[in-house]
Length: 591
Image 1 (tube, one colour):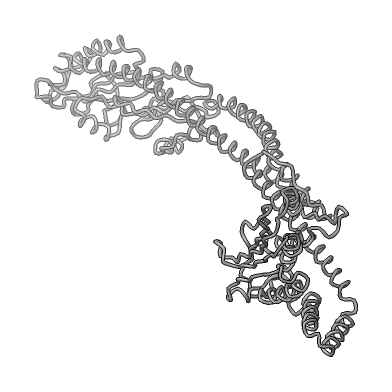
Image 2 (cartoon, rainbow, N blue to C red):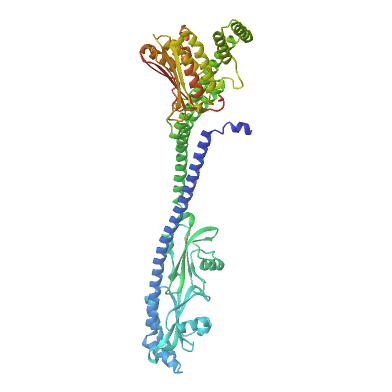
Protein backbone atom coordinates (compact mmCIF):
# COMPACT_ATOMS: atom_id res chain seq x y z
CA UNK A 1 0.00 0.00 0.00
CA UNK A 2 2.81 2.36 0.92
CA UNK A 3 4.63 1.56 -2.32
CA UNK A 4 1.54 2.46 -4.33
CA UNK A 5 1.20 5.74 -2.49
CA UNK A 6 4.88 6.60 -2.96
CA UNK A 7 4.44 6.92 -6.72
CA UNK A 8 2.18 9.91 -6.06
CA UNK A 9 4.80 11.52 -3.79
CA UNK A 10 5.98 13.89 -6.50
CA UNK A 11 7.07 17.49 -6.16
CA UNK A 12 4.06 18.60 -8.18
CA UNK A 13 1.60 16.77 -5.92
CA UNK A 14 3.38 18.03 -2.80
CA UNK A 15 3.14 21.62 -4.03
CA UNK A 16 -0.50 21.11 -5.03
CA UNK A 17 -1.45 19.64 -1.65
CA UNK A 18 0.55 22.33 0.16
CA UNK A 19 -1.16 25.13 -1.75
CA UNK A 20 -4.60 23.60 -1.17
CA UNK A 21 -4.00 23.11 2.55
CA UNK A 22 -2.77 26.69 2.88
CA UNK A 23 -5.82 27.96 0.98
CA UNK A 24 -8.26 25.85 3.02
CA UNK A 25 -6.69 26.97 6.30
CA UNK A 26 -6.83 30.62 5.22
CA UNK A 27 -10.45 30.27 4.09
CA UNK A 28 -11.43 28.55 7.34
CA UNK A 29 -9.73 31.19 9.46
CA UNK A 30 -11.27 34.03 7.44
CA UNK A 31 -14.70 32.37 7.48
CA UNK A 32 -14.61 31.74 11.24
CA UNK A 33 -13.35 35.24 12.01
CA UNK A 34 -15.86 36.84 9.65
CA UNK A 35 -18.73 34.71 10.90
CA UNK A 36 -17.86 35.46 14.52
CA UNK A 37 -17.31 39.17 13.82
CA UNK A 38 -20.58 39.54 11.95
CA UNK A 39 -22.41 37.55 14.62
CA UNK A 40 -20.97 39.77 17.33
CA UNK A 41 -21.83 42.83 15.25
CA UNK A 42 -25.41 41.66 14.83
CA UNK A 43 -25.72 40.93 18.54
CA UNK A 44 -24.29 44.30 19.49
CA UNK A 45 -26.55 46.03 16.98
CA UNK A 46 -29.60 44.16 18.28
CA UNK A 47 -28.59 44.89 21.85
CA UNK A 48 -28.17 48.56 21.01
CA UNK A 49 -31.59 48.73 19.37
CA UNK A 50 -33.16 46.82 22.25
CA UNK A 51 -31.43 49.15 24.68
CA UNK A 52 -32.97 52.12 22.91
CA UNK A 53 -36.36 50.43 23.03
CA UNK A 54 -35.91 49.72 26.74
CA UNK A 55 -34.92 53.33 27.36
CA UNK A 56 -38.03 54.52 25.55
CA UNK A 57 -40.22 52.05 27.47
CA UNK A 58 -38.66 53.03 30.78
CA UNK A 59 -39.17 56.68 29.87
CA UNK A 60 -42.85 56.03 29.27
CA UNK A 61 -43.13 54.21 32.59
CA UNK A 62 -41.32 57.02 34.37
CA UNK A 63 -43.78 59.49 32.82
CA UNK A 64 -46.65 57.43 34.20
CA UNK A 65 -44.95 57.23 37.57
CA UNK A 66 -44.33 60.99 37.56
CA UNK A 67 -48.03 61.50 36.89
CA UNK A 68 -48.94 59.29 39.85
CA UNK A 69 -46.35 61.07 41.98
CA UNK A 70 -47.72 64.48 40.99
CA UNK A 71 -51.35 63.79 41.84
CA UNK A 72 -50.59 61.90 45.04
CA UNK A 73 -48.42 64.85 46.06
CA UNK A 74 -51.38 67.18 45.43
CA UNK A 75 -53.48 64.92 47.64
CA UNK A 76 -50.88 64.98 50.41
CA UNK A 77 -50.65 68.80 50.38
CA UNK A 78 -54.39 69.33 50.11
CA UNK A 79 -55.52 71.67 53.00
CA UNK A 80 -58.33 69.40 54.07
CA UNK A 81 -55.98 66.41 54.26
CA UNK A 82 -53.37 68.47 56.13
CA UNK A 83 -56.01 69.63 58.63
CA UNK A 84 -57.21 66.10 59.41
CA UNK A 85 -53.64 64.79 59.77
CA UNK A 86 -52.77 67.71 62.08
CA UNK A 87 -55.76 66.92 64.35
CA UNK A 88 -54.72 63.28 64.39
CA UNK A 89 -51.23 64.40 65.39
CA UNK A 90 -52.76 66.37 68.28
CA UNK A 91 -54.50 63.22 69.47
CA UNK A 92 -57.92 64.46 68.26
CA UNK A 93 -59.53 61.81 66.19
CA UNK A 94 -61.09 62.91 62.93
CA UNK A 95 -64.86 62.75 62.86
CA UNK A 96 -66.87 60.63 60.50
CA UNK A 97 -67.85 63.68 58.52
CA UNK A 98 -64.24 64.81 58.15
CA UNK A 99 -63.19 61.40 56.95
CA UNK A 100 -66.10 61.34 54.51
CA UNK A 101 -64.96 64.67 53.08
CA UNK A 102 -61.70 62.98 51.96
CA UNK A 103 -63.73 61.22 49.28
CA UNK A 104 -63.81 64.33 47.10
CA UNK A 105 -60.05 64.70 47.41
CA UNK A 106 -59.38 61.10 46.46
CA UNK A 107 -61.77 61.32 43.52
CA UNK A 108 -59.37 63.76 41.84
CA UNK A 109 -56.76 60.99 41.69
CA UNK A 110 -59.24 58.59 40.12
CA UNK A 111 -60.34 61.30 37.72
CA UNK A 112 -56.90 62.19 36.39
CA UNK A 113 -55.12 58.85 36.60
CA UNK A 114 -56.46 55.79 34.82
CA UNK A 115 -55.70 52.43 36.31
CA UNK A 116 -56.01 53.43 39.98
CA UNK A 117 -57.49 50.52 41.92
CA UNK A 118 -57.74 52.19 45.31
CA UNK A 119 -56.29 54.94 47.49
CA UNK A 120 -55.91 54.67 51.29
CA UNK A 121 -54.93 57.40 53.76
CA UNK A 122 -53.50 56.62 57.22
CA UNK A 123 -52.67 58.87 60.14
CA UNK A 124 -49.25 59.16 61.64
CA UNK A 125 -50.29 56.48 64.10
CA UNK A 126 -51.09 54.20 61.15
CA UNK A 127 -54.86 54.42 61.76
CA UNK A 128 -57.04 54.20 58.65
CA UNK A 129 -58.67 57.53 57.75
CA UNK A 130 -59.90 56.74 54.27
CA UNK A 131 -61.86 54.71 53.26
CA UNK A 132 -64.11 54.54 56.19
CA UNK A 133 -63.77 50.82 56.76
CA UNK A 134 -60.72 48.67 56.67
CA UNK A 135 -57.70 47.55 58.62
CA UNK A 136 -54.77 49.55 59.92
CA UNK A 137 -51.56 50.12 57.94
CA UNK A 138 -49.59 47.31 59.59
CA UNK A 139 -52.22 44.88 58.40
CA UNK A 140 -51.85 46.11 54.82
CA UNK A 141 -48.08 46.20 54.29
CA UNK A 142 -45.05 44.91 56.04
CA UNK A 143 -43.48 47.22 58.62
CA UNK A 144 -40.26 47.43 56.65
CA UNK A 145 -42.04 49.26 53.83
CA UNK A 146 -43.57 51.70 56.32
CA UNK A 147 -40.11 52.41 57.69
CA UNK A 148 -38.76 52.80 54.17
CA UNK A 149 -41.50 55.31 53.31
CA UNK A 150 -40.78 57.27 56.47
CA UNK A 151 -37.08 57.46 55.69
CA UNK A 152 -37.82 58.48 52.09
CA UNK A 153 -39.44 61.71 53.45
CA UNK A 154 -42.31 61.95 51.01
CA UNK A 155 -40.88 60.04 48.07
CA UNK A 156 -43.22 57.50 46.47
CA UNK A 157 -42.04 53.96 47.27
CA UNK A 158 -43.17 51.17 44.97
CA UNK A 159 -43.62 47.90 46.84
CA UNK A 160 -44.74 45.56 44.11
CA UNK A 161 -47.57 43.06 43.72
CA UNK A 162 -50.10 43.31 46.54
CA UNK A 163 -50.56 39.79 48.01
CA UNK A 164 -54.15 40.62 48.87
CA UNK A 165 -54.87 41.90 45.38
CA UNK A 166 -52.59 40.01 42.96
CA UNK A 167 -53.75 42.06 39.99
CA UNK A 168 -52.52 45.30 41.50
CA UNK A 169 -49.23 47.01 42.26
CA UNK A 170 -48.84 48.65 45.64
CA UNK A 171 -47.04 51.95 46.41
CA UNK A 172 -46.69 54.01 49.61
CA UNK A 173 -45.49 57.47 50.55
CA UNK A 174 -45.30 59.36 53.80
CA UNK A 175 -47.29 62.61 54.22
CA UNK A 176 -45.47 65.51 55.90
CA UNK A 177 -47.23 68.24 57.87
CA UNK A 178 -46.48 71.58 56.29
CA UNK A 179 -47.40 73.53 59.44
CA UNK A 180 -45.34 71.30 61.72
CA UNK A 181 -41.96 71.62 60.14
CA UNK A 182 -42.73 68.78 57.72
CA UNK A 183 -42.99 66.18 60.40
CA UNK A 184 -44.41 62.85 59.37
CA UNK A 185 -48.18 63.12 59.68
CA UNK A 186 -49.44 60.00 57.94
CA UNK A 187 -49.19 57.66 54.94
CA UNK A 188 -50.84 57.37 51.55
CA UNK A 189 -51.22 53.89 50.08
CA UNK A 190 -52.14 53.56 46.39
CA UNK A 191 -52.90 50.46 44.39
CA UNK A 192 -52.49 50.49 40.60
CA UNK A 193 -53.94 47.91 38.28
CA UNK A 194 -51.33 45.82 36.44
CA UNK A 195 -52.84 46.95 33.16
CA UNK A 196 -51.49 50.41 33.93
CA UNK A 197 -47.96 49.02 33.49
CA UNK A 198 -48.83 46.99 30.42
CA UNK A 199 -45.95 46.60 27.97
CA UNK A 200 -48.01 45.28 25.09
CA UNK A 201 -46.98 48.12 22.80
CA UNK A 202 -43.36 47.37 23.57
CA UNK A 203 -43.82 43.64 22.89
CA UNK A 204 -45.50 44.37 19.56
CA UNK A 205 -42.51 46.39 18.38
CA UNK A 206 -39.99 43.63 19.18
CA UNK A 207 -39.06 40.42 17.39
CA UNK A 208 -41.34 37.43 17.59
CA UNK A 209 -40.70 35.37 20.70
CA UNK A 210 -39.39 38.35 22.72
CA UNK A 211 -40.44 38.90 26.34
CA UNK A 212 -40.43 41.80 28.81
CA UNK A 213 -40.00 41.58 32.61
CA UNK A 214 -40.43 44.19 35.35
CA UNK A 215 -38.59 43.39 38.59
CA UNK A 216 -38.97 45.44 41.77
CA UNK A 217 -36.16 46.48 44.10
CA UNK A 218 -36.61 43.29 46.12
CA UNK A 219 -35.98 41.16 43.04
CA UNK A 220 -39.61 40.08 42.77
CA UNK A 221 -41.50 39.86 39.52
CA UNK A 222 -44.02 42.63 38.88
CA UNK A 223 -45.00 42.25 35.24
CA UNK A 224 -44.00 39.55 32.77
CA UNK A 225 -45.00 38.65 29.24
CA UNK A 226 -43.60 35.15 29.81
CA UNK A 227 -45.97 33.30 32.14
CA UNK A 228 -43.76 30.36 33.06
CA UNK A 229 -40.77 32.21 34.48
CA UNK A 230 -39.54 31.16 37.94
CA UNK A 231 -38.00 33.15 40.75
CA UNK A 232 -34.73 31.20 40.32
CA UNK A 233 -34.51 32.31 36.69
CA UNK A 234 -35.23 35.91 37.75
CA UNK A 235 -32.45 35.77 40.35
CA UNK A 236 -30.08 34.37 37.73
CA UNK A 237 -30.98 37.11 35.24
CA UNK A 238 -30.57 39.83 37.88
CA UNK A 239 -27.20 38.62 39.13
CA UNK A 240 -25.71 37.64 35.78
CA UNK A 241 -23.66 39.87 33.49
CA UNK A 242 -23.79 37.70 30.37
CA UNK A 243 -25.16 39.02 27.12
CA UNK A 244 -27.17 35.85 26.51
CA UNK A 245 -29.28 33.73 28.87
CA UNK A 246 -31.48 30.66 28.51
CA UNK A 247 -35.24 30.94 28.90
CA UNK A 248 -37.58 28.08 28.12
CA UNK A 249 -34.77 26.12 26.44
CA UNK A 250 -33.97 28.96 24.04
CA UNK A 251 -30.94 31.24 23.97
CA UNK A 252 -32.09 34.79 24.58
CA UNK A 253 -30.32 38.12 24.15
CA UNK A 254 -30.97 40.07 27.37
CA UNK A 255 -30.96 43.82 27.95
CA UNK A 256 -31.32 45.24 31.50
CA UNK A 257 -32.65 48.76 32.01
CA UNK A 258 -32.83 50.35 35.48
CA UNK A 259 -35.87 52.58 36.20
CA UNK A 260 -34.70 55.07 38.79
CA UNK A 261 -38.13 56.51 39.63
CA UNK A 262 -39.41 53.14 40.81
CA UNK A 263 -36.08 51.54 41.72
CA UNK A 264 -37.15 48.70 39.46
CA UNK A 265 -35.39 46.87 36.62
CA UNK A 266 -36.81 46.24 33.17
CA UNK A 267 -35.52 43.22 31.27
CA UNK A 268 -36.06 42.67 27.55
CA UNK A 269 -35.26 39.19 26.16
CA UNK A 270 -35.07 38.47 22.42
CA UNK A 271 -34.38 35.07 20.76
CA UNK A 272 -30.81 34.79 19.53
CA UNK A 273 -31.90 32.91 16.39
CA UNK A 274 -34.21 35.80 15.51
CA UNK A 275 -31.42 38.32 16.06
CA UNK A 276 -28.98 36.22 14.04
CA UNK A 277 -31.45 35.46 11.27
CA UNK A 278 -29.48 37.55 8.77
CA UNK A 279 -26.30 35.61 9.43
CA UNK A 280 -27.64 32.57 7.54
CA UNK A 281 -27.34 34.59 4.33
CA UNK A 282 -23.76 35.40 5.27
CA UNK A 283 -23.07 31.73 6.02
CA UNK A 284 -24.37 30.76 2.58
CA UNK A 285 -22.29 33.50 0.96
CA UNK A 286 -19.18 32.32 2.83
CA UNK A 287 -19.73 28.70 1.78
CA UNK A 288 -20.31 29.63 -1.86
CA UNK A 289 -17.29 31.95 -1.84
CA UNK A 290 -15.15 29.25 -0.23
CA UNK A 291 -16.18 26.68 -2.85
CA UNK A 292 -15.53 29.09 -5.73
CA UNK A 293 -12.25 30.22 -4.16
CA UNK A 294 -11.13 26.62 -3.64
CA UNK A 295 -11.91 25.66 -7.25
CA UNK A 296 -10.14 28.71 -8.62
CA UNK A 297 -7.17 28.17 -6.31
CA UNK A 298 -7.06 24.48 -7.33
CA UNK A 299 -6.86 25.45 -10.99
CA UNK A 300 -4.24 28.11 -10.27
CA UNK A 301 -2.23 25.74 -8.06
CA UNK A 302 -2.36 23.02 -10.72
CA UNK A 303 -1.14 25.46 -13.35
CA UNK A 304 1.57 26.91 -11.09
CA UNK A 305 2.84 23.53 -9.89
CA UNK A 306 2.94 22.25 -13.48
CA UNK A 307 4.72 25.42 -14.62
CA UNK A 308 7.36 24.97 -11.89
CA UNK A 309 7.86 21.20 -12.04
CA UNK A 310 7.68 20.57 -15.80
CA UNK A 311 11.24 21.86 -16.45
CA UNK A 312 12.45 19.72 -13.52
CA UNK A 313 10.77 16.61 -14.97
CA UNK A 314 12.33 17.35 -18.37
CA UNK A 315 15.72 17.65 -16.69
CA UNK A 316 15.14 14.36 -14.85
CA UNK A 317 14.31 12.57 -18.13
CA UNK A 318 17.45 13.97 -19.70
CA UNK A 319 19.52 12.84 -16.70
CA UNK A 320 17.97 9.34 -16.83
CA UNK A 321 18.99 9.01 -20.48
CA UNK A 322 22.63 9.34 -19.37
CA UNK A 323 22.34 5.87 -17.82
CA UNK A 324 22.37 4.48 -21.36
CA UNK A 325 25.56 6.34 -22.23
CA UNK A 326 23.88 9.34 -23.85
CA UNK A 327 25.26 12.50 -22.29
CA UNK A 328 23.23 15.26 -23.90
CA UNK A 329 22.30 18.73 -22.73
CA UNK A 330 18.79 19.74 -21.75
CA UNK A 331 17.06 22.48 -23.76
CA UNK A 332 17.04 25.87 -22.05
CA UNK A 333 14.01 26.71 -19.86
CA UNK A 334 12.76 30.07 -18.65
CA UNK A 335 10.34 29.19 -15.85
CA UNK A 336 12.32 30.79 -13.02
CA UNK A 337 15.81 32.01 -12.20
CA UNK A 338 16.53 29.03 -9.93
CA UNK A 339 15.42 26.36 -12.43
CA UNK A 340 17.15 28.18 -15.30
CA UNK A 341 20.37 28.27 -13.27
CA UNK A 342 19.95 24.56 -12.39
CA UNK A 343 19.46 23.66 -16.06
CA UNK A 344 22.42 25.85 -17.07
CA UNK A 345 24.67 24.23 -14.45
CA UNK A 346 23.64 20.74 -15.59
CA UNK A 347 24.39 21.60 -19.22
CA UNK A 348 27.78 23.00 -18.25
CA UNK A 349 28.53 19.82 -16.29
CA UNK A 350 27.53 17.63 -19.25
CA UNK A 351 29.69 19.70 -21.62
CA UNK A 352 32.60 19.45 -19.19
CA UNK A 353 32.13 15.67 -18.83
CA UNK A 354 32.00 15.27 -22.61
CA UNK A 355 35.19 17.30 -22.91
CA UNK A 356 36.87 15.09 -20.29
CA UNK A 357 35.66 11.95 -22.07
CA UNK A 358 37.03 13.25 -25.35
CA UNK A 359 40.30 14.22 -23.65
CA UNK A 360 40.69 10.80 -22.02
CA UNK A 361 39.80 9.09 -25.29
CA UNK A 362 42.35 11.09 -27.23
CA UNK A 363 44.98 10.45 -24.57
CA UNK A 364 44.32 6.73 -24.61
CA UNK A 365 44.34 6.71 -28.40
CA UNK A 366 47.61 8.60 -28.49
CA UNK A 367 49.06 6.35 -25.83
CA UNK A 368 47.94 3.29 -27.77
CA UNK A 369 49.57 4.55 -30.96
CA UNK A 370 52.74 5.40 -29.06
CA UNK A 371 52.82 1.99 -27.39
CA UNK A 372 52.17 0.31 -30.74
CA UNK A 373 55.05 2.12 -32.32
CA UNK A 374 57.20 1.36 -29.28
CA UNK A 375 56.28 -2.30 -29.54
CA UNK A 376 57.09 -2.27 -33.24
CA UNK A 377 60.43 -0.65 -32.48
CA UNK A 378 61.13 -3.16 -29.70
CA UNK A 379 61.07 -6.27 -31.94
CA UNK A 380 63.88 -8.33 -30.61
CA UNK A 381 65.61 -5.40 -28.81
CA UNK A 382 68.30 -7.73 -27.47
CA UNK A 383 69.18 -8.70 -31.02
CA UNK A 384 69.50 -4.99 -31.89
CA UNK A 385 71.66 -4.20 -28.87
CA UNK A 386 73.83 -7.33 -29.41
CA UNK A 387 74.33 -6.40 -33.06
CA UNK A 388 75.38 -2.84 -32.12
CA UNK A 389 77.65 -4.26 -29.44
CA UNK A 390 79.32 -6.60 -31.99
CA UNK A 391 79.71 -3.65 -34.38
CA UNK A 392 81.30 -1.58 -31.61
CA UNK A 393 83.95 -4.25 -30.83
CA UNK A 394 84.62 -4.79 -34.50
CA UNK A 395 85.29 -1.09 -34.99
CA UNK A 396 87.49 -1.05 -31.90
CA UNK A 397 89.57 -3.96 -33.27
CA UNK A 398 89.98 -2.11 -36.60
CA UNK A 399 91.03 1.11 -34.87
CA UNK A 400 87.85 3.05 -35.81
CA UNK A 401 87.52 4.71 -32.41
CA UNK A 402 85.42 7.63 -33.65
CA UNK A 403 82.92 5.35 -35.34
CA UNK A 404 82.91 3.09 -32.28
CA UNK A 405 81.91 6.06 -30.10
CA UNK A 406 79.14 6.93 -32.54
CA UNK A 407 77.86 3.36 -32.30
CA UNK A 408 77.79 3.70 -28.48
CA UNK A 409 75.84 6.97 -28.82
CA UNK A 410 73.42 5.30 -31.24
CA UNK A 411 72.98 2.37 -28.81
CA UNK A 412 72.24 4.74 -25.91
CA UNK A 413 69.86 6.66 -28.17
CA UNK A 414 67.90 3.51 -28.92
CA UNK A 415 68.00 2.42 -25.30
CA UNK A 416 66.56 5.78 -24.15
CA UNK A 417 63.83 5.59 -26.77
CA UNK A 418 62.84 1.96 -26.23
CA UNK A 419 63.32 1.28 -22.52
CA UNK A 420 60.75 2.35 -19.89
CA UNK A 421 61.82 2.80 -16.28
CA UNK A 422 59.66 2.75 -13.17
CA UNK A 423 58.23 6.14 -14.12
CA UNK A 424 57.21 5.01 -17.60
CA UNK A 425 57.06 7.93 -20.02
CA UNK A 426 58.39 10.41 -17.46
CA UNK A 427 62.04 11.45 -17.27
CA UNK A 428 63.94 14.38 -15.85
CA UNK A 429 64.80 17.40 -17.93
CA UNK A 430 68.48 16.47 -17.43
CA UNK A 431 67.90 13.00 -18.92
CA UNK A 432 66.12 14.54 -21.91
CA UNK A 433 69.02 16.96 -22.48
CA UNK A 434 71.56 14.08 -22.30
CA UNK A 435 69.52 12.22 -24.92
CA UNK A 436 69.46 15.32 -27.09
CA UNK A 437 73.23 15.69 -26.68
CA UNK A 438 73.77 12.12 -27.97
CA UNK A 439 71.39 12.77 -30.86
CA UNK A 440 73.28 15.94 -31.78
CA UNK A 441 76.58 14.05 -31.70
CA UNK A 442 75.20 11.52 -34.14
CA UNK A 443 73.77 14.21 -36.43
CA UNK A 444 77.12 15.99 -36.41
CA UNK A 445 78.56 13.01 -38.24
CA UNK A 446 76.25 13.94 -41.11
CA UNK A 447 76.50 17.68 -41.07
CA UNK A 448 80.00 18.04 -39.77
CA UNK A 449 81.04 21.64 -39.12
CA UNK A 450 77.76 22.94 -40.55
CA UNK A 451 76.02 21.96 -37.29
CA UNK A 452 76.59 23.67 -33.98
CA UNK A 453 74.42 23.98 -30.88
CA UNK A 454 74.16 25.59 -27.47
CA UNK A 455 72.28 24.55 -24.32
CA UNK A 456 71.49 27.20 -21.66
CA UNK A 457 69.46 25.50 -18.92
CA UNK A 458 69.90 26.45 -15.21
CA UNK A 459 70.92 23.55 -12.98
CA UNK A 460 67.86 23.99 -10.75
CA UNK A 461 65.63 22.87 -13.63
CA UNK A 462 67.47 19.61 -14.41
CA UNK A 463 65.48 17.58 -11.85
CA UNK A 464 62.09 18.67 -13.20
CA UNK A 465 59.93 15.80 -14.55
CA UNK A 466 58.74 15.95 -18.17
CA UNK A 467 57.29 13.42 -20.63
CA UNK A 468 59.91 11.41 -22.51
CA UNK A 469 60.88 12.71 -25.98
CA UNK A 470 59.15 16.06 -25.44
CA UNK A 471 62.03 18.27 -26.62
CA UNK A 472 64.01 15.93 -28.92
CA UNK A 473 61.44 16.07 -31.79
CA UNK A 474 61.78 19.87 -31.79
CA UNK A 475 65.58 19.64 -31.98
CA UNK A 476 65.21 17.10 -34.77
CA UNK A 477 62.92 19.47 -36.69
CA UNK A 478 65.40 22.34 -36.27
CA UNK A 479 68.24 20.19 -37.65
CA UNK A 480 66.39 18.61 -40.56
CA UNK A 481 64.35 21.63 -41.73
CA UNK A 482 66.50 24.43 -40.35
CA UNK A 483 70.18 23.57 -40.60
CA UNK A 484 69.59 20.95 -43.32
CA UNK A 485 67.88 23.45 -45.65
CA UNK A 486 70.42 26.18 -45.07
CA UNK A 487 73.51 26.87 -47.15
CA UNK A 488 76.37 27.21 -44.76
CA UNK A 489 76.68 26.64 -41.03
CA UNK A 490 73.58 26.47 -38.82
CA UNK A 491 72.99 26.56 -35.11
CA UNK A 492 70.41 25.02 -32.81
CA UNK A 493 69.78 26.69 -29.43
CA UNK A 494 68.06 25.28 -26.34
CA UNK A 495 67.23 27.74 -23.55
CA UNK A 496 65.20 27.50 -20.33
CA UNK A 497 64.05 30.21 -17.93
CA UNK A 498 61.27 30.91 -15.42
CA UNK A 499 58.12 32.42 -16.93
CA UNK A 500 55.95 35.18 -15.44
CA UNK A 501 53.50 32.62 -14.15
CA UNK A 502 56.19 30.81 -12.14
CA UNK A 503 56.50 27.92 -14.63
CA UNK A 504 59.47 26.80 -16.76
CA UNK A 505 59.68 28.20 -20.28
CA UNK A 506 61.76 26.24 -22.82
CA UNK A 507 62.77 27.68 -26.21
CA UNK A 508 64.19 25.55 -29.06
CA UNK A 509 65.31 27.61 -32.07
CA UNK A 510 67.41 27.51 -35.20
CA UNK A 511 68.79 30.10 -37.63
CA UNK A 512 67.63 28.30 -40.74
CA UNK A 513 65.55 29.61 -43.66
CA UNK A 514 62.32 29.54 -41.62
CA UNK A 515 58.88 28.20 -42.50
CA UNK A 516 56.82 29.67 -45.35
CA UNK A 517 53.79 31.64 -44.16
CA UNK A 518 51.27 29.33 -45.82
CA UNK A 519 52.87 26.20 -44.34
CA UNK A 520 53.13 27.86 -40.93
CA UNK A 521 49.44 28.82 -41.00
CA UNK A 522 48.43 25.31 -42.02
CA UNK A 523 50.62 23.87 -39.25
CA UNK A 524 48.93 26.07 -36.63
CA UNK A 525 45.47 25.06 -37.87
CA UNK A 526 46.36 21.38 -37.64
CA UNK A 527 47.82 21.87 -34.16
CA UNK A 528 44.54 23.52 -33.06
CA UNK A 529 42.40 20.73 -34.59
CA UNK A 530 44.77 17.86 -33.65
CA UNK A 531 44.66 16.54 -37.24
CA UNK A 532 48.02 15.44 -38.68
CA UNK A 533 49.11 15.20 -42.30
CA UNK A 534 49.06 11.42 -41.91
CA UNK A 535 45.30 11.65 -41.39
CA UNK A 536 45.14 13.04 -44.96
CA UNK A 537 47.36 10.26 -46.32
CA UNK A 538 50.60 12.30 -46.26
CA UNK A 539 53.33 10.70 -44.11
CA UNK A 540 56.37 12.09 -42.37
CA UNK A 541 55.37 15.72 -42.35
CA UNK A 542 54.83 17.68 -39.12
CA UNK A 543 54.00 14.58 -37.09
CA UNK A 544 56.56 15.23 -34.34
CA UNK A 545 55.49 18.87 -33.84
CA UNK A 546 51.76 18.07 -33.65
CA UNK A 547 52.54 15.11 -31.38
CA UNK A 548 54.45 17.36 -28.96
CA UNK A 549 51.63 19.93 -29.00
CA UNK A 550 48.94 17.34 -28.26
CA UNK A 551 51.01 15.78 -25.46
CA UNK A 552 51.54 19.22 -23.91
CA UNK A 553 47.79 19.89 -23.95
CA UNK A 554 46.97 16.45 -22.56
CA UNK A 555 49.50 16.57 -19.74
CA UNK A 556 49.66 20.26 -18.88
CA UNK A 557 46.54 21.81 -20.44
CA UNK A 558 44.84 22.22 -17.02
CA UNK A 559 48.01 22.61 -14.93
CA UNK A 560 49.42 25.67 -16.68
CA UNK A 561 46.81 28.51 -16.84
CA UNK A 562 46.19 29.90 -20.34
CA UNK A 563 48.43 27.19 -21.76
CA UNK A 564 48.62 27.41 -25.54
CA UNK A 565 50.62 24.19 -25.87
CA UNK A 566 53.46 24.44 -28.38
CA UNK A 567 53.92 27.91 -29.85
CA UNK A 568 55.63 28.06 -33.27
CA UNK A 569 57.14 31.33 -34.48
CA UNK A 570 59.01 31.66 -37.77
CA UNK A 571 60.15 34.35 -40.17
CA UNK A 572 61.42 33.45 -43.59
CA UNK A 573 65.18 33.84 -43.66
CA UNK A 574 65.35 34.38 -39.89
CA UNK A 575 64.82 30.90 -38.49
CA UNK A 576 62.18 29.14 -36.39
CA UNK A 577 61.47 29.15 -32.64
CA UNK A 578 59.46 26.60 -30.66
CA UNK A 579 58.25 27.69 -27.20
CA UNK A 580 56.55 25.64 -24.49
CA UNK A 581 55.77 25.97 -20.76
CA UNK A 582 55.86 23.18 -18.19
CA UNK A 583 55.20 23.21 -14.41
CA UNK A 584 57.72 22.44 -11.69
CA UNK A 585 57.14 18.71 -11.22
CA UNK A 586 59.51 16.70 -9.02
CA UNK A 587 57.56 13.47 -9.51
CA UNK A 588 55.83 11.89 -12.48
CA UNK A 589 52.32 13.27 -12.87
CA UNK A 590 49.33 10.92 -12.76
CA UNK A 591 46.72 11.33 -15.46
